[in-house]
Length: 111
Length: 113
Image (tube, rainbow over all chains, first blue to last red; front, side, top):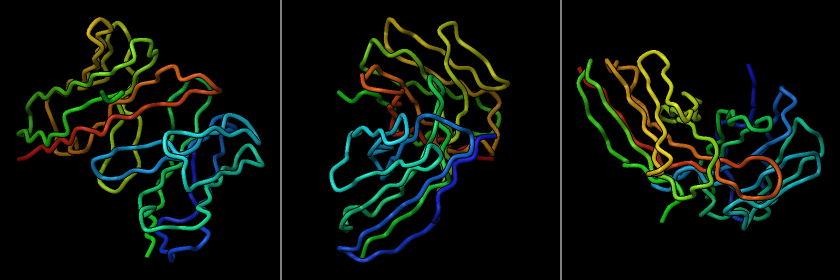
């Protein structure tokens, strides 16, 4: 079974802090994704990577950046956390043409 | 128009009932379709892919209607454990690398005794 592991289940950060969310997958998938999920808005794609050091903006990239230095690891960075970034963050991975497998999510609260 | 639209529900049904959800998508060039299940405060998990000819997995049947641009999920003999949110997922062509799925906001199902 593919395993996608997110480093933290719950996180509380202060406004203005730099926040790192880490995601690791163990199945050599080319594609990795970061989504956020909010009530009534569903899952929205923040950033996407289809190869090491490659990244593409998703639907809501503002306020976020990403890093993919190794194939198995995809990091989401909030440069200066704001309260409107309080959300559930979900990492996913997939091989080409296959559906996503998700990590268990990080519930981030920015106070 | 949203790329993927679903009735949010909730659908409250008695145990043993048959329930069906529909989902419409806007991009007629979309190539692949899926249903995911998401339990409260958990991550989405793949329930089943949806094939052009329709497909069945136990009590679950998925169908695709390309002409009308909708997909459906039918659950027969509902169990209490089927209570969850069901996400309709479409893979529209977006260009760039890789495949980027578009998720509906989900339909909530509550199965009751």
